[in-house]
Length: 321
Image 1 (cartoon, rainbow, N blue to C red):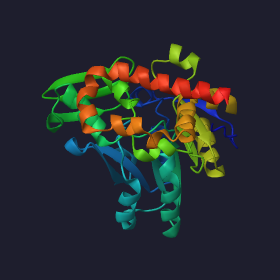
Image 2 (image 1 turned 180 degrees about the vertical axis):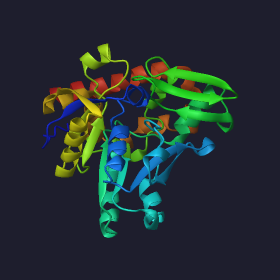
Image 3 (image 1 turned 135 degrees about the horizontal axis):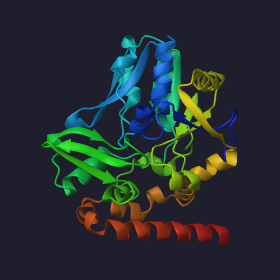
Image 4 (image 1 turned 135 degrees about the vertical axis):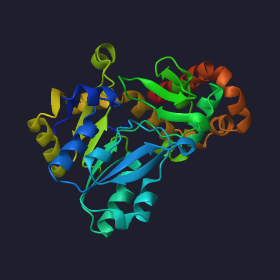
């Protein structure tokens, strides 16, 4: 199981701006970093994301903070590498971007090739989904994606859930009691590469940001906070600067064991998936068929229980070995 030792002090931070904190997926930290870097003229370009109907979220480049959209977490694959490659001439360095851990290495090499300095943040990642997962969920709730005007996967509280506006009607599906969370953990719509993931924390990034899935936050926080992990001197300097500037508040210092504990469910699952090559197993091939997907929504809760039972058996088998 992944058990990294972090070179810089892990912290839990929240935005000092209550609106930014509330609208963020987990504390508004990334928004505050972007605001600070633009205000201090430390970046000239930022990679943002905006909802564009049927295509869901698409990347765009912005050159001032006023054009930034606080979109929150995005749970479908976006080929950021290709977007940056196609728009390389439109990047005015330094660049700020967020992406998943598996995207950091290729993107950094692309930017180095073009002599583009960048501040790169990795989103500590459980797994990523195909767009089909979102289409499937909306369809099962009788929401036509063509009629969706606004959409968020998270934000407006923590851990929150899917929010959308369609046909002038507002919908909210809380992560703790909606079918979306069953879909997210079903493994039916995961990207295939997620079954072989080796880097949950994005150690090649300048900074990583994670949800604080620790008991004291799960039980007491309904607004949002982030575990923040600097990995480079550049990243460490940014975090120190935004704390000193007052844009974020330091809640507490964490040690490496607490950081790992906060992501334990993900780390154990990924370890077992790699060890037993679950991604190549017959059960994964079976549940990803179109026939199974048609019947899945009716049995989603049962499916999740069975799948976690399989993981529990694998864990017991590993201990006995």
